[in-house]
Length: 401
Ligand SMILES: *Cc1c(COP(=O)(O)O)cnc(C)c1O
Image 1 (cartoon, rainbow, N blue to C red):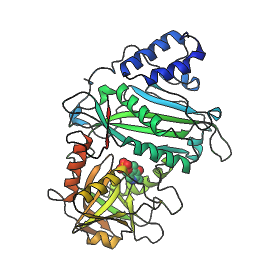
Image 2 (image 1 turned 30 degrees about the vertical axis):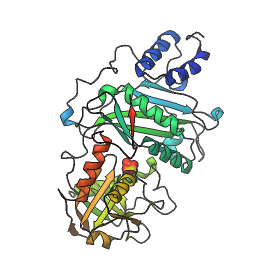
Image 3 (image 1 turned 30 degrees about the horizontal axis):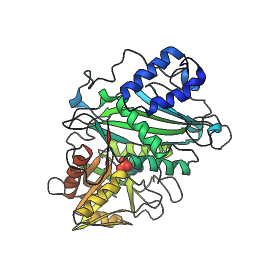
Image 4 (image 1 turned 120 degrees about the horizontal axis):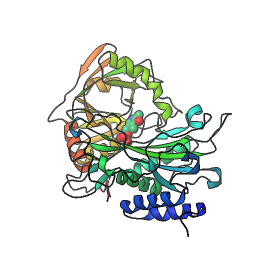
């Protein structure tokens, strides 16, 4: 089968993506590219996607141009992104995916994502393993399943769990030089699923694109565990019963910017949202879940469709129970919060963030932070597992080699 035949490309690409060595994958993709003119990206994307080139050095161990000590949570573009499409003839499947040079993508002005916010995202981190080669991911199948659940809500086809996890691994390996050294941070991975096909009347888009890009990030807060100050918003809400608060749809995030900017201008770190019906029960922060601790009892709002079921949340519940705490998923009122000893937030980006104060109706309430807190303990335990510093007897980490 000649690589120069356009018909040969899909099958050839499939076998390449089955290859274990990413070096082989990249080289083979370049060969196809050079020989074929069919390129490594779906035809639709060809005009706008930068192509794989021979001069980049993604197979090198680390990137020399970066100041690893001053990584924030900003966007540092990396070398490759992963792209996979589903057209009507694919009947809800994603037949093939491929790595492309990281760069702008082309979308129809009438695409479903641009007009009707038919889109989802995920957030994950890959850490460099200490003392040996390779990287670790944290519970990536959970992100895959959450995307499938969200896709159902947003009327989109989704990649299989296996496709999702394999695509994440490919993206890590292709961008391996951007994975920060041990202790300096992680390679943040951002999978997207969007209605990329054109549609004018309100309806699901005719074509979907799954894409993963990556960026090296430092610890979310400089000290790793710097306490944050929240303000309760009882005017704006992020979700409502029957809405989409429980899925990671892009539609949930622009609406919180107003409240977030107001909070930041007053010196707060972020907003803590209340339920939109009673305006009395805690929901979550813009991009992380919330926990309150009182004595030996830990409480967190139950996931009933208005809060995002965080993978860090789920993991922290298990770790707190292992430590002998009683963990309750239930309605948590603002009074429960005010009465708490300790409050903390969880999420992939923040991991576990202690809350030092919460301001509600102009009143500032302070909570215990620092050493000797459950938040500190959970942060250490969880990051040790995620970074591969301790034995993972939960089976949560997935190796990328
Ligand atoms: C992503 C997100 C979280 C945290 O989820 P993790 O899986 O722990 O990263 C919490 N709340 C919201 C609104 C989010 O978008």
